Length: 157
Image 1 (cartoon, one colour):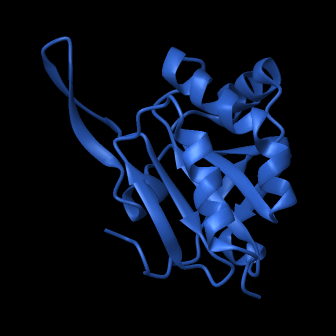
Image 2 (image 1 turned 90 degrees about the horizontal axis):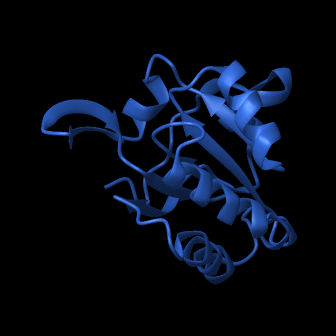
């Protein structure tokens, strides 16, 4: 459980040729969602839900970032295909995934594989995790996160 704990500063390569740095978003609400793989059915549906509600998150002063182990090249294709208005962060060495504890052993076709557990974190303006969702089921999830952002209110500067 990371709720009510500060997130250590981290950086990751982001789409658009930029680098995401947590400290660069001080004073702002952030939603960081971890997903297993670009351009797969569940991940596409989840990203589209955040895309469709992006304006409402922005109106509340909240930025969204998606994270997976895929390369920036893969992220750029996925982002363009889906018209995501938010950046995707590349974590090929799993350092960000490990910081948030989202790497899990999963069963795929009877084999144990290590992968990203679909998870979302709501971080306040002071860099503290206010809510976390693990083992996310996609339907209704983005709406639930939006409701949590509304409940949290304006970001603390």
